[in-house]
Length: 214
Image 1 (tube, rainbow, N blue to C red):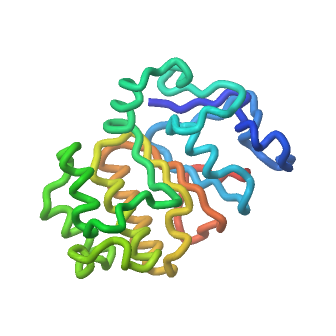
Image 2: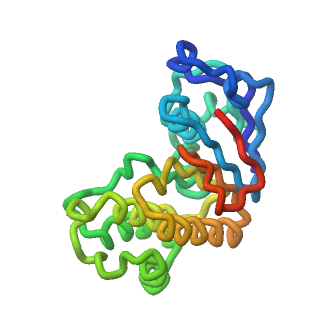
């Protein structure tokens, strides 16, 4: 599966500075399955918009976006549902957790649909991320950094061809960030999936096949 952008730009970005962008309105930008991409940019340069367009939840753009040769503007709701269940996973910057549910229930709510991980595997991943002791606490009382790790764990409970990760380490210290990063990369390798990760920082300690500026 390949993701290709052709002269694509979200409409709100038309009024923003984008001189150094290697993405907006480029003739063609291709993300290849199996490769990892870091997109680094300060706030306001459109990192969230990019991932949201690829995921099909923003439609206010010009240009074209293709998933495996299919223009996403032609995809039906049924096709999008299948894509989001089996081919694209998204770690939202806003996390999209249910505050009144426990951390474990937030995960199981998704895993009950995909049946991708066993409870044992979920608990093992939670242990690696250092949130196993919080699984039975309501998500809303966790710190933002703990919630980020919860959202990362939940995103891994499905099959995918690409992981879209939107500033998912912003409230973690370096140690927890790298632990979470390595867990994501391991799952990507297991599924032969691509990773498109956005960040405010360069993440020098992490390895990426391609680093891009926006």
